[in-house]
Length: 240
Image (cartoon, rainbow, N blue to C red):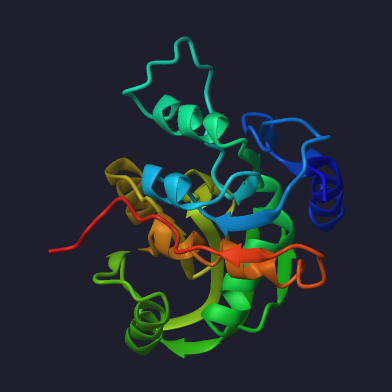
């Protein structure tokens, strides 16, 4: 297969035009006519993963390796150290970020990982309605996401509505009307703001909420004529 053929399939699954204006999804390294022998799916990559993969591998990542404007390429700095080795090995790279959040990832995590029945999906948000004991619901979420700790803002005994946005979504809180908002990377001032207006939030982790990207995308790539590998996604944090 060529990079262009794979790109067109991915664009059909989750159109790149749906990404946010600040995002940088799409073909980031290589060209459409390059041949691909293997596809590797992951949230992110590191140097070990790049060195391990054979030549002519196409990496399809959730997070764009090239994100903001790059003013220099220094081989001992990230991400240039990865790009240098990828170019040497004729690797190519496509990122599916906020477009895939919208079309697939949020719902996949909400339903298949957390076990909610989706009442509605809108933009980056999935919503469920019902009645849960707060303490038991939070413990279930913590267990299913394999979180070492679950940071919670606010307190309610009963939960009747849950909204979730994977990744870093705390800045969206003004658009959330629910008893509990689940998202990652909740900063101190986001927490203070939520507390002041009575919005209960739980930090489900950026990596932990997005680590299922490869599995979610892989479900749609089962019939390709080349191998599709779901790699162990990279978590830069350790917990002690």
